[in-house]
Amino acid sequence: MKADKGEWKLIEWIRSHTRLDPNVVPIGPGDDMALVSLGGESQCLLTIDALLEGTHFDLSKATPRQVGYKALAVSLSDVAAMASKPVAALAWVGLPSDRDMKFAQDLSAGMADAAVKFACPVVGGDITSWNQQLMTVGTAVVSRPAGIRPVRRSGAKPGDLLFVTGELGGSLLGRHLTFTPRIQEARQLAALVTIHAMMDLSDGLSTDLNHICRESGVGAEIVAEAVPVSEDARKLAKADHKEPIEHALNDGEDFELLLAVEPVDAQDLLKQNPLTGVKLTYIGKIVEGSGVVMVTGDGKRVPVAPRGYEHFK
Amino acid sequence: MKADKGEWKLIEWIRSHTRLDPNVVPIGPGDDMALVSLGGESQCLLTIDALLEGTHFDLSKATPRQVGYKALAVSLSDVAAMASKPVAALAWVGLPSDRDMKFAQDLSAGMADAAVKFACPVVGGDITSWNQQLMTVGTAVVSRPAGIRPVRRSGAKPGDLLFVTGELGGSLLGRHLTFTPRIQEARQLAALVTIHAMMDLSDGLSTDLNHICRESGVGAEIVAEAVPVSEDARKLAKADHKEPIEHALNDGEDFELLLAVEPVDAQDLLKQNPLTGVKLTYIGKIVEGSGVVMVTGDGKRVPVAPRGYEHFK
Image (cartoon, rainbow over all chains, first blue to last red; front, top):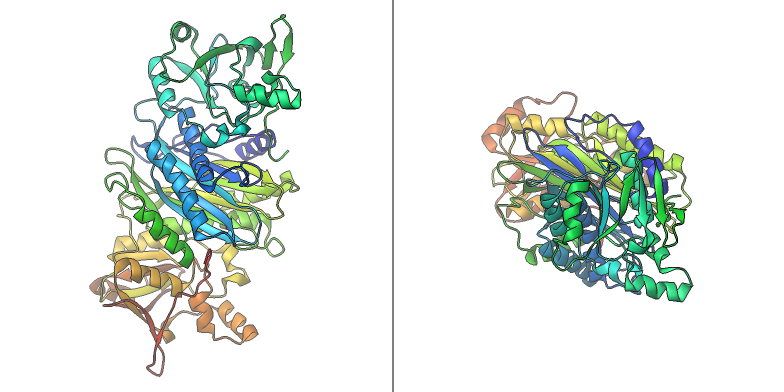
């Protein structure tokens, strides 16, 4: 589940107006997934994500098959963020009435690509049409802890070291359509070290790290030079005369993992990256206080405000 | 989950292109809900429904709170159709960027109305905005069998008697916003008699009974005079000079139950309605063959084609 700035206010409002029984809903709104009890020992995790044409994809730059893949992969990235294991997905699509069956089949084939790759079958859906020019598509995914305790956003503690997978920024150049949800990596890391907090980077490091801080009641310090800036972020920076790091902090849709690791365990990760074929980078640490600051090469401390993509301001 | 005529073709296509492991997904696409295994004995049911402004509601006639209620109630009607018990819901909303926080709060309050009434807490969601004039909203719901085996659409047998709850037609006059998902009634009936097939009437009796027939490989005969025609259907018929029964057959969004009951058990239901405050009406029977016919007062046999609302023709 995504959570942008305006949305955040609404989530706070919903939270304050909802009484959830913690026995039935151990993890409620505001995390990457909710955790619910199905009676007895049985639990499952739930997430939902909506993609809107023009906001999350552009059909002049993406094929319907890519959009279908992205729709499911976005929710699977939430499955990764909780270090859980996918069970099944549901999909819905709202199509302009002039789109044809072939378009819907391509979309469905793209979802199937993600479903097969990440062992998360699409078991149902809802297809509707309307007299608008743009389409909407989305998925809900159910996962299960499968032996690993779900990792929340709210458990970060001062002293924890911060890591990210992959490289950040510039996903608009294509990676936002083709990214790999880090399900395997999240479960591998959670089995190796104590992760106090984790989320997937959907709104950009600046926004998402501020979420972890807010939810955990802590602050964070990141090291500017440590942030893994993608080649795509550099390309965009050349074109728009911004700094590459701005793209890495604020672009969003990286769908990489951000994790706060218990300091003693973190030493193991500093010595050797246990992941195969995926970068794992130390970027800073959790501190007392609130908010995020970035320490630059010349020792300046720059506040990092949430500047990722914001819906519903 | 809804399933209209064009959608049906797509579902057939998806089914034929998807290999689902029946141990993991005992009930897949095409029923009111999917049933999935969470490992061990643990199972849950899943459904998703999307509402599109202009197609499923009209904000000049419905308050945002009513729309929120309907969004969740539509999925809860699927929970009823499987005779299952709600566990939790997820919601998403795509809003035109000029709608304000108050609007979103009202929508959320409407969902909470349904959540509280039917013990199905909203545990998460996704809120996004776009530059379109119309909004979309929907929910995914997880339920559990809770001691009653899920009732499918595909189990109807020749000789079964057909029943519906409530009265049909004309829901557009308001009932489509305020209906009561028949969760309690479905579970009560499933605990009393053997229900071979059940679904909720979302697309209209003509469309939905044809679905049951198609899925079960049988035909059906309904008695025209037995169909419970609502007062609203009569009102609409007066205005548009159609027959009230046409509205009862084709209007859709009744969200009542349609059930095929094992013939010996059905005798009990004919003698006495076990439901409190909800009509239960015998409307006909399942027969060998295919398709639906309606027997009129003068003995004519009229074929009943699926004429409910069709998306994505």
